[in-house]
Length: 428
Image 1 (cartoon, rainbow, N blue to C red):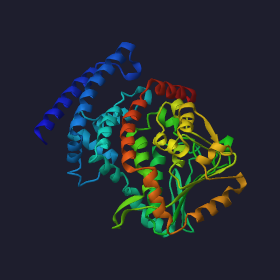
Image 2 (cartoon, rainbow, N blue to C red):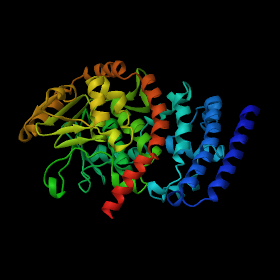
Image 3 (spheres, helix red, strand yellow):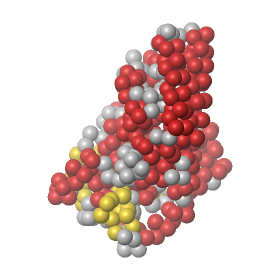
Image 4 (spheres, rainbow, N blue to C red):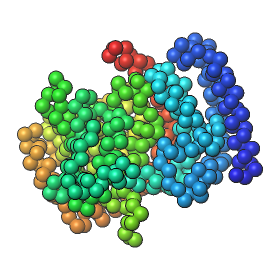
């Protein structure tokens, strides 16, 4: 570690120790008075200025040290944990983060903001950023462990997702009927595992995603695509920046677009890519609507709707801001994201987001015909070129760098904490 880097890291560590001492003298976040909250915020802001300057000056060197000169490929969670050990005070240490994790969202200190500062700089780096994004495109260890069994049987049952290979089609069914397929960290892990398996299995030519039948009284027996983020988990403090919000975007959703990177890939492409179809029954809200923007074709029942009410929820809808304007135009993107407009499958503007609309009782047959349309030898090469134009990797990387910082701040915005607090009290 160079002398300048060593001295700058020591300065950050000393400042962080002073802030921790100050915070230790205050009550827990939810119990603080207005003056105590202001004092805590001022302490945080002071050291965060140092952290941001440090990462702007030394971010690439820090990343090189954490990855042994980019010879290793840690995923997001492993990377931030290593940073906490190697550079005290730069990001929360593992024990502090574990303690924070046990609290409800409203009673947290907001330590994930420091992860946001760190990852903002890493992703902005033209050296470190692409390396990290490629690392997130590699198959997970869980998927590699399940692959032999899936290749043999064609079926994997997980808590949130059922994966079945039939007639060359990987059929992913989201099956969290307890929460209308509202996403949490369990579902993100299951989805990434399923996407990896579908991409790695040589018997799969096309992927299909659909919601399963629900047991919720209002939708009993009907399929539902997704109700968005799981607000119960958010209130409980179980929706994390790294494990959910960033892993979701840089993990399975990016793999849907760019494929999975493997060591034994062909010389002409290290990624295994396949075309994907999504079918929407009933609704796709929030994260469900975001997800549709990366599919090669989308079908919907005529009574379904899409919505992405991010501004009302108080958070940023993943890469929805990056993709929705490109798909539907800037005016519709602002109406949907900023004003909470719903897009019904039958209305004219839905043509920018949905390829085919059919009556609910005809959707099954329409889906089978749709997946066959994507089962062609030239489809993969053409979708690769389309994705390269529509979503250039460098533009996506810059977006995700800013997202890492802004979403970490939004997680602890007063409006978000008030909303999840009211949600928690209502359900208690």
